[in-house]
Image 1 (cartoon, rainbow, N blue to C red):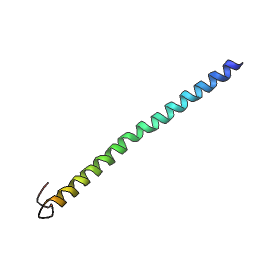
Image 2 (image 1 turned 45 degrees about the vertical axis):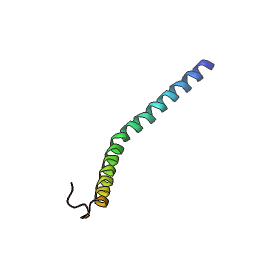
Image 3 (image 1 turned 45 degrees about the horizontal axis):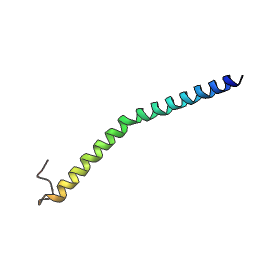
Image 4 (image 1 turned 120 degrees about the horizontal axis):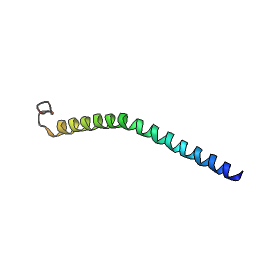
Length: 59
């Protein structure tokens, strides 16, 4: 009977890990899009700081 308890615990652990990894991987696409948007904004800001005319001339 003790083996059944350990087997149930192992199955629950594996299911929990799969659930957490699935959720994390689903969020990766959304986070990548947000990171890309943030990088573009930082590049625009940096070019605006460096440009003598306020950055409007460079794209």
